[in-house]
Length: 283
Image (cartoon, rainbow, N blue to C red):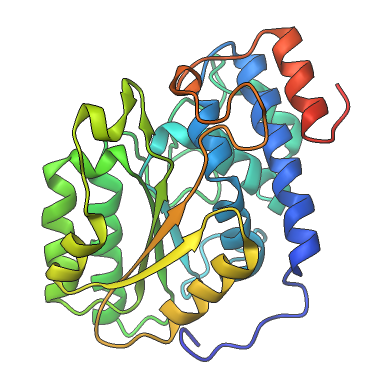
């Protein structure tokens, strides 16, 4: 199934994906505003990628979240948990009302994903680089078990500064993990500013290619390109795939776009209202 599976009729078409991505962005703003803290910028940049994964690409079932042959997604940049929570809620893994409990005492929706508390979370992440390493291990395990489920991981571009990432990249290529697709959220910003000023990670494509990876490039806000890249990755044999997705941090909210100040800050009520309205919602 992993390479030749047929798309289910319930999988969303492109206009529906765009509509869902906006709903997820609105959910992110509401979550972070209600919590009074969190990471809106990197959540909004990844919203289209996450939407394509959960509503078009992955073989998952919220009614059977532990299905043996399911695809698995690892949010390696775990601080972007609000966007994954929003996707899981929209998909039906838990009630949407719980989104407004983000980071509150007793809530299962904490600042970073918790695999023991949240249905649909495959790995607790937050320590940068570790999610990528776990994804490599999961892909290797599926190969050894002849499990047809594919493994997906989302990395932040600043996360590439971690040494653990490169050990994982080397292992994935060594074991020819063609059931592994990694998406790089290439928004160019991290908490302290632009990646190129903090610690350059370029050229990412040449580095991963030299390790033995298949490299694809997409506009991370274009569903035609994202979906086609997933299709190409699924049909690539003998090597893992890295999809380099060019994105805009804070995408969809004018005062958050390409602004590192919104890496980890909650909007005021006035700002949240403006953001929701810009995204086409009602406050």
